[in-house]
Length: 194
Image (cartoon, one colour):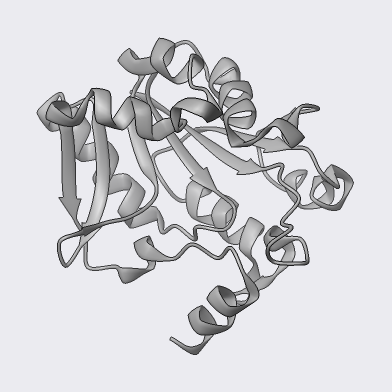
């Protein structure tokens, strides 16, 4: 079974005021933390979508056996990066994980998502901690065409999730990091205190 992971790292990080992916995180950077955890997971097809200041990330990416996609339309919003990544996912992929550079993930969490979809035949798996959903989101490759048709004005991935809510699995995990979304300096500072 092949699993694809798409790491979104093309944005301007304007709310943070500095490139989020290069912020220190658990002995490395947020960006490399994502890559290391994916490398240790069942996700063998890893795609990184770069855009703004891509040259800052390329030296890190080159240390890993992953694909780099340049999204020249990154200024149009996250949907353009997701679509670029999905187009690059291997055709044999059975699942597609979508994660942002500012949502730190753990290999055991994404492995549980992949295992849950494989066992249940569900279309979407989302981790939950203490009853609250978090990140990242794993999609069955059966939803590839839906993922390729997302639009900013239709709430992007939310539209796909709402459309297939009945086939969505909430996967309980003992990891409250699934709720982290490091958009602003305050979010990052608070996360470091944990």
